[in-house]
Length: 142
Image 1: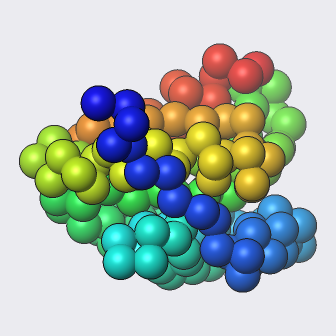
Image 2 (image 1 turned 30 degrees about the vertical axis):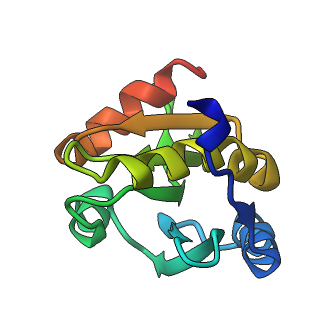
């Protein structure tokens, strides 16, 4: 079974876009929605958003297709400190085609490494992509 797992390469231009995104100066929430070009077997940028909430972002995701999301989030800690964690969210809704799910799952780690991400989360239900969900996930990191 694992021999049929396709691991896609990360597009070089996406790596550059991820670097720029990481070092952006804005203090608002921003997101990159990343998809796999199934024909080219390449991980590419689908769309980039500035000043977008998780609620708005959730509406941009396809219902029955996986997506990778890189989200720069303005996080206000309980003690009042503000940080801007760089979060990776793998959205793989129930009902996706198995071959798509496998291709995304197989390519996830390569993208996480290329983007040098440490806050990696997964969801099988886009409805749970809320600010409370993200805050609960980030609480683990302190």
